[in-house]
Length: 397
Image 1 (cartoon, rainbow, N blue to C red):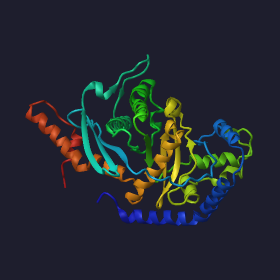
Image 2 (cartoon, helix red, strand yellow):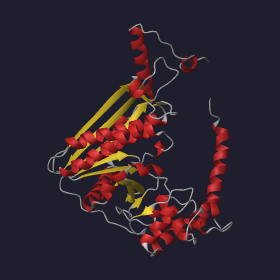
Image 3 (cartoon, rainbow, N blue to C red):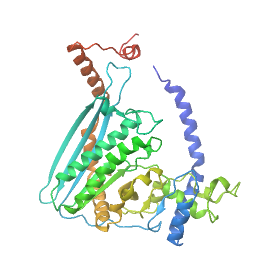
Image 4 (cartoon, one colour):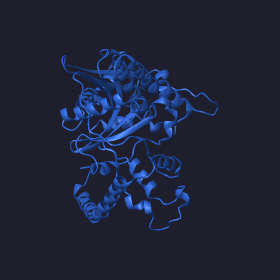
């Protein structure tokens, strides 16, 4: 047996006891957060300036509306469409006989109203050519970047958005449509990469797809959004820290409060916990702008977000700026996200179905590599994997 569960059980008991002991402190901090958000009545522009200029080690949301604002879900249109994509992949395995990877994109288009319908599809793509698996340097001193690991996940996000744009182009003219992605629209994992990677993955890939969908708005009301279930973000709670800080200009490295820092009154509270106490069923919060560094690359697609109560869950919904600033598109997003969650038992049914089309199981991965190795053998292509790979597939005891 690889895991001694009896030894782990004692450690779990200790963890639970610690959490139980900390529960009263967490309750007090949550109550402080709710009171700060609900009672704030200061000048919004002043707060925005203070939030943007704050020097902190954590992301501070820039408020678009008053923090405690609440919006009821608008009526859904009599006929509409919801489309979604999701992806899964098989990464490069250096212990295997050949260097390749696979991205599987699942998609779904659901029609509602007088002409209901559903189209579900899965599209696997194999990558093995050098041009598809390497990003070449563009400046002296840069190295070529292999598309694997976290960068392959970014490429998968790009392919999901590309497929979403293709589906949007095929949508019926005049029909209100929501194009929905899973996870964040903010490609923050690109921040440590080179300019060449950012250009290819973001500007020439992801943002170009968003631009195409904005163009399609001339033919139909088309809203683009992403849905984050059970978010762990603290951007808005960090904004409450800015409110609580008496300093006119915030610089956490020069904080004058060695102990009893005012901001610690809401320390450890998550955004979803805050809005769980503020929002009623179906309501959304105010809009906020993410302070993620990669946002400076987004231009007209700069991401704004709101929180929404979908049954028992508080979810985070992200939209490009051009959706957020268009009242009709923002209302369409709000209404259809809530409607999708009601149809999907608390989670958007379109995303759930897209995930089912995209998922690659452990058995699928093993079958894929077996097919690769079988094809190499049949074509008499010399190839061999590592001893480690062989050992993992062989039982010794």
